[in-house]
Image 1 (cartoon, rainbow, N blue to C red):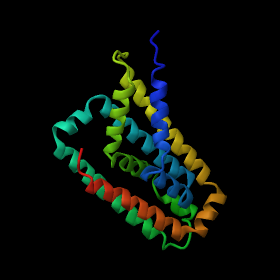
Image 2: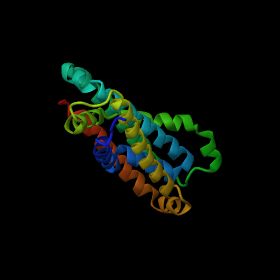
Image 3: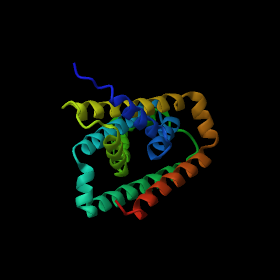
Image 4: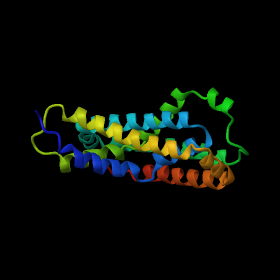
Length: 208
């Protein structure tokens, strides 16, 4: 039986990275408090799938491709930064709304749309693939079982989805939503400003 115990330190490190506040955390938190747990879970699933895709691509040489074609990496970063800036503007505008959307309004918004919202947000930052690749290169042993990329990527999905699902659960409670409504304008302004800063940083930092 093959030993995959070497994966635990890698997954622990990447899970800690996912728990670091960033665009993904802000989006899940804002959705959980301003819409519903269902939509926040759909976004969390999209985040997990985005991490899974990046982990697979990192395992099969995406970073090498970025190194060989720097223009591709720069284009990816600029488009991702622009997407985050648009997202920041939308959240900023939500601060002008006077209430949390009703259950009827929440039902009208597709869970599939929320899923793709989370997926595109996760995929908007190609630096995630660079981080995955660096961790894999540093911690993977020289000789690994053939299925390692798939098992590792599945673990990355579960850790990312699990963390954001916890965030969605905690912040979608009535108490959290009442707190959000009380400080909605300040929260949306802060979240929008931070997301905009993340997007701008991606655009201006064009060195692979």
